[in-house]
Amino acid sequence: MLLTSSLLLLSLVQVQSPQRANDIFTSVTPAEFSHYFDSDTAAIQRNVFINTDLFGYNGEFNPAQQAQSIQIELFGNRRVTAYLEDSQQAYEHGYTLRYSIPSHEYGMALFSVYNDEVEATIHLDNELYLLHPVGDGQASLELTDQTLNFECGTDDSSASTPPSPGQNNNGN
Image (cartoon, rainbow, N blue to C red; front, side):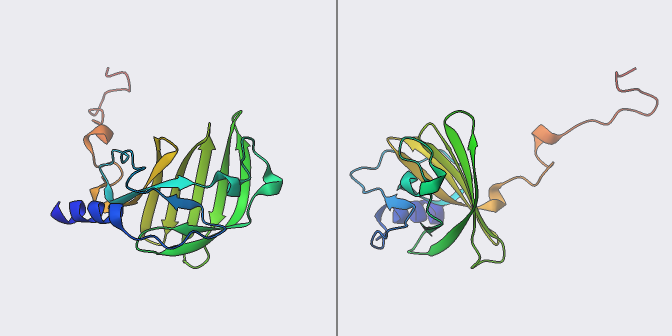
């Protein structure tokens, strides 16, 4: 717990590298910080602003203006380049974008945008990063501690009682 608290505090004060043209995230300064997304699985978090112009969104979705590659800054000045593979309009004012990250054997980023809010899932081999909107134009980027997730079918909400021999599905 002490390590997690230290990492969260470090994420607030970590020095960010200079902004580049295709950076998808812009750092939130301590003066602009609102609050983190309430997460039970975050090993470390930081808040960011998202450059939705790179998605081809400037008040309206325009695929012709999408950047074909984006820079994703994670933590500790770690950067990956992601390449656009697919984008689709979803619902009336939303869209999804799928990026590959070829520098990793299993590298993928999925962004979902709806009503100016962005959520994302970023997979880098065995690491999972999540992006959640928190308001004020900010989103929390988290590196998840996957040991805090229940294995599929092992938590109480997944428990089921098999029928006794001789019973049908209606309990008779």
